[in-house]
Image (cartoon, rainbow over all chains, first blue to last red; front, side):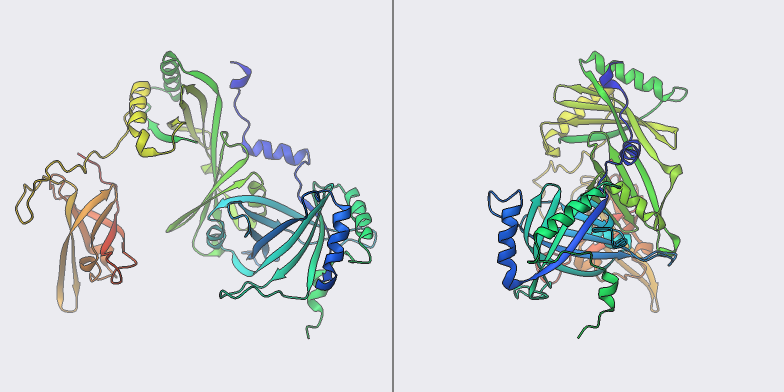
Length: 223
Length: 284
């Protein structure tokens, strides 16, 4: 039997090999901040100077995201959150299904938030699939803005909108843009955090990118 | 991507699966095919946690022809929902281990040699469930075309020539006597796909009977007038309704699995009801 006729490796085996070799980018290193609408042009200008993909002008995106939760049947752990993104400006692209774990802020010495993350491209009836799976829709929003790249780093500057029920134009939830600096990497590549911190410093004082603790935000009084 | 036919191949008694695969391999090689590697399709099923309500099953399939994809089918009583995802979907299933647990003993694999013969790709799969041999599946793909209707005859001929297998297909539905005059009689067995649907039930006033005509449109579906089927009692429709088809009028009473009235009935000219039969109708 020739070499081309050997039995194919099973999917389970190839997955466990990939896991063992630690080549699956399942960690997200993240810094977040925001900038007022009035100052966003200056920030975009600065990013155009710093980033790689600027020859053809800034890359734009317009996504809609639906966040689902799946309750633990034993009620012991927090619900599992799954997010589905659909590009509104490129409708033939697949859905992006995303699992995001609990963020780990670490101590003062850790430069970024680290959270486990799985990014899965999907096609088919994903929303119905998740509904039938037992997931519940928690919230949804649309997000529109610009995407920059610098090496492995991804920088998005985008505005978050409420989903409008009628044909009204979508309503922004605030007068500022959300700025995110993130890298997806396999486990243990903590050095990238330092690079991100260094890059974030170059954007000061236009925007302060930091480790955001959602738990603390939740306790802040809403007036 | 082309048109694919998947067909079980009988394993004769006192013969092994390996023997049949070797026989088929010899036959197809003699026709001039060349072996192009091996293939593997596997399916693992996950059951929902009992506390999550009605049991749902998620089938996760991999195919060596599409090594970077994961095919998933969610079965929940009435619905089958499919999603095609990239390989990381397997990792997500691990995250869902609290909610969905793998039924290891029903892991099914179909694997074996893969042949190419001109525009055709043939795969001879030995199917095993949890390592136990279950049967043989032949997959034949005609790659240049994606319209099933256009290549059906070609595939059937190919299967007959190479494997001696025959594709089952209902060969009725061709009206050879268009000269039938409205209102005149025709012999009962002229149109084997025409039949009746009747309901016999009881309510407070006594026995309730209703009958209407139906037409078989596919191996397990008949259509009938919504105006007749709609008013029939809903609560015991499935229990008390039978369909008899004109195929020989042997009086075989077919049970009903489900039915649906056209959603636009009453609003537009759509006045049909679709009735699903419990079992597939075999032509004779």
